[in-house]
Length: 271
Image (tube, rainbow, N blue to C red; front, side, top):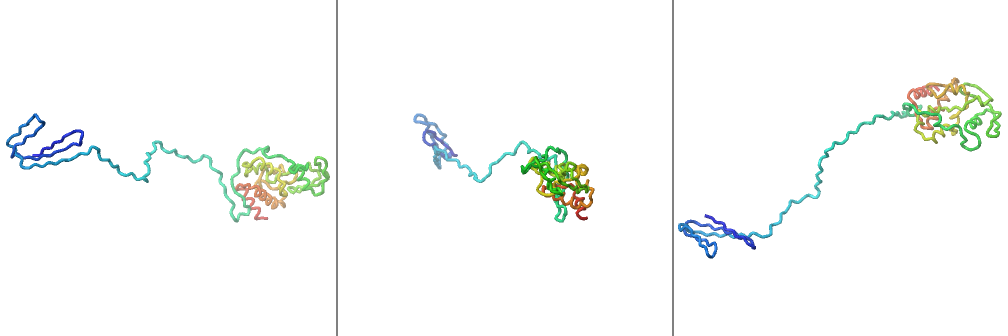
């Protein structure tokens, strides 16, 4: 038989284990005044005492090391990510010119809407010499020397309209034509220009024949049409007309639509 006795106090507890058998009598004294009888049939043959001291300070608890490189755990968002829809307005398709393309201009659909003549400046005196753009063209293209009076009044000139083979000495019967009409320029890229760019284009004197003196009737017959829609009545001028048209569009980085491109290429091949 094994008895375990533990005592408690201010000092560490002692645990006593006693193993006995029934061969001898055992008396256990609880205190100095009390004796507890034990059956005389119990005999002690072997006594084994084990004393275990329990420390008052508990052993420290060692936590498992945490890896410093372990990434923090982020809970999955409860709100699903928004779905991005494709834009409703698609950009205009642009076809760059092929290396062998004789026209050499971007091919893209014409811009539709928004044109207003007032968006392009009227004739003005760029060099402040007293003569506006119209007068500058008449002076430069006159077949005879002209006399310039007060406020750039022009006398004594003679002009020839290459569109329709008409000659005149009356400059008031001639218009100054934008070889590439302002409306056509707008549809081909000028819609994206600022006011200064449009003003310069409308008064471009940098190259000859970008602006040209022609009969008012031929200019108004042409209106704002491109070469696929209108060509000068003078067929002998067609090749030059097409070349100047392309030169202007290249200089101003303007595009051509497909029908315009195909006509220009066809005309160039026959020139």
